[in-house]
Image (tube, rainbow over all chains, first blue to last red; front, side, top):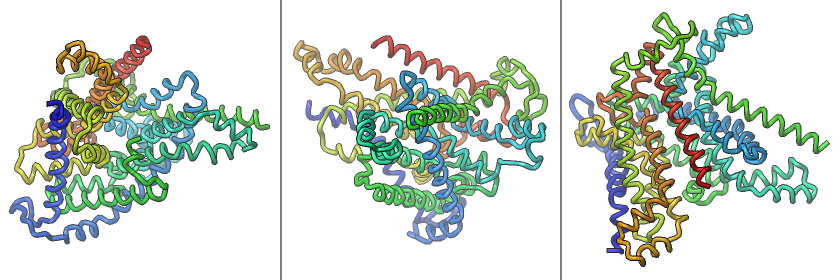
Length: 283
Length: 263
């Protein structure tokens, strides 16, 4: 009985993950190789041409998604690192208060937050409308429906996921190590570059992993902030699945997106010298 | 120059951190503010005066109320299922050695790192292939799936810090396996279980992407909001958002205060 305990404990989750994570992936792989339409039905034809067609037709959106996701990730890193640094080293007794304030947006629904952000950026909304009223902005000034709005929205929405892991790794850095470097005549900048920064890389790695994938695949920001000329791959997959009922193309696109992201993660892990992605992600 | 430069740098960083915090909170301020907007036309995008009207007419849009209720019920049910099976797996992973542990860890990692969009799409592929009708049940299935790993990871983290000798002592004193679990193990892992439950509830009630694939004709709160973007978001949405925000913040502060007392 005792030997059976772990298996009995794991069984329900195993079944859930097998039936609803593994089997659906197989189902999606199978659908991506079928041809047909929603009215006459789909038949398995092992037509890999779905992939070629889908990528050919939507390469613009695919490339754009990777670009926007990448730009937002870099922006989050640049904006978030100093915040994490300051809270970890100078936050003092108020550290948890600052972290709480960073996490505050998560108490509001993601969708609602994006819509409020849209309110804020609206052409004649409370921010730009007021500035225009004061004559501080040209009347035709607008931010919504631009690349800047979408990348800005992604940066805004996922920023806490970048700040937290970097904070966690910086928090572990013993300040005495930095002092030691300075005692050895390292300038402040050199101590940061050669001691603090390398020690925080696992946090940077985790932060990039936690933000790049969801930002690239997110359909909400582009739908609410992007207008018609900034559609991302997430919007296409949603439309193909839910509106056009074009399941084979949509499945092929989903797989392509996942494959591209996985390859990206592994290349990135190699470049950063993290041999074991699983291990880095588990930290 | 070094010391003064350092202090100036720290000050600048301090101000900068506050600027980022203000930026992160600004949409929340807008949401709260526009819940009090006395709008006359259909759109709720310009400030037209203060009113408490929408708090009184909170449940006047019946399909919005239904959507909110659906979200709460789905979040409650999927949280209960997730916490029960996730705690079991967390215990197994944190305490026991067994075959398939590596594969399980990999599955947990895969479930966390699969983009939501792909998870939703693959579930839809399964349901379409199997002719499964989509409704609240398929939403619950999906929500348990994406919350499960987070509960497992949180509970496992708590389990590995436990001293196994406590459980052995309970057994030596004649407690049954179930008695040991209920009186020793569960109380000590409870903070992890509660954190997992809150996380799972929050993930469920907030989800748009996965839900949009598996909902059929069932509408949840986030789905309703996205659907209403084109026609204009009514102030009731802002009021509901404000109330959910307030309750969430109060619970979090209450938890933090309670945790401090215990220490």
